[in-house]
Structure formats: C-alpha cells, structure tokens
Length: 168
Image (tube, rainbow, N blue to C red):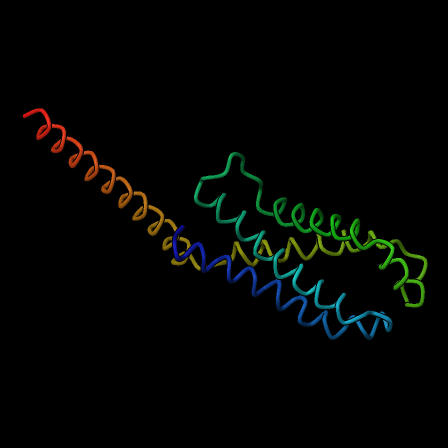
C-alpha cells in the first residue's frame, strides 16, 4: 500500500472526525438526554465512515476495484448505507432521544438522508484534491509494482543459480 494512499485514508478520517467534532458538542443541545457514550460512539463511527469513503475512492482511483461507481453516487451510497446500519443498531435509543426534542414525530431514519448528503460532500472533497497528489498516488503505486516485479526477478535468478549448482 502506498504512503500517498494511506495519507488519503488519514485525510478521510480527519474529515469524518471534524464533522462529528462539531456534532459532538451540538448533540447535547438538540438531545438533552444524550449520554456521553453515545456521543463518543457516534464520533468514532463517523471517523471510520470518512476512512471508508476514502479507501473506496483510492481503490477505484488506482483501478483495483471490481466495479467503478460514479463519483457522486459513491459518496451518498456509502454515507446512506453506513447510517442505515447505524440506525438499525440504535433505533430504540434514537427514537427515545427524538421524543423530547424538536424532532419529535420524525423517524430516526432521517439520519440516513442526512448522511447521504454529507457523503456527497465528503466525496466532492475527495475529488477536489490537487492533481499533484493524485499523480503521487499513481507514481507510488507504479513504483511499488516495479519493486515487486524486481524482487520476483531476483528470486527467480537465485533459484536458477541454485538449480544449476545442484545439477553440477
């Protein structure tokens, strides 16, 4: 894995971390009964979500993936899917929190729509990277492939030499 690719994953984690650093402090204003453990869990969930969006971006950018998703489609699908899973895990808690808030009467599944939109934003940010960074990712991937092929060639030469010595 190239260092540029890892750097992109870290940037994705930072984006997710920043989105929810803000939300970490806003959640108690909206949901007064939100426990600190919920706030921390959601913060870490979205840090991971940012990394997942960037991993998929990197895999598709390097041409390793089996299929290619259009840029905008990728972000909202990942954002919506990850939040759908989140709502499935904590649906009773979200319903209970929404009872006494300004969102009373709404379904907790609105979080899925919210993060579909934020997934698009994260994906757009990933596409607006400078071209130099994208070129660095491609160059480092090519260098790694070349280094691996050189290692293979060296091993093959060594095995040929040892087989020649054994035959003598």
